View 1: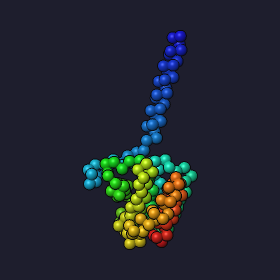
View 2: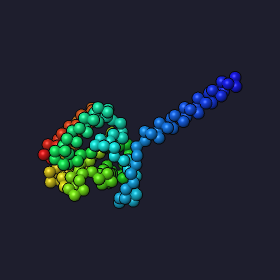
View 3: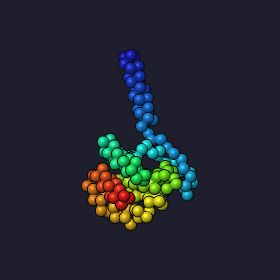
Length: 176
């Protein structure tokens, strides 16, 4: 009986240790940035596609990354996609996405030619944030139309990859 108790205790201890190690290794890195809200901690960008809400498969992330990477190599504009579960301490996705784009340094600093697509299924919010160097080629009115026409219809059917891909392709047409 004593051996069984020791075994169960050791098994429980190893299970707890394994679980905490897994959580430690899978949590995203963070970056602290100064903003109008003071010091804000944002998740660290991991690439062109940052799916913190886990809406996309690995293959879908790779395809979206390939599309925006090829555009950047040809035209220089940088497009980054992020899915989020929280916009705290901000009250709206517009302010959050602007601060996040600045914290991540989306686009070339001297050209300010970045575009950040921020999406939260949980919060039912989306924003396409343009750098100032892009605004003449891609206005806020055009990004609103892209969201309404190319993205939201797919999102309503829980097709997040399709909505993001359609949105990215529409953005690329406007930027070319």
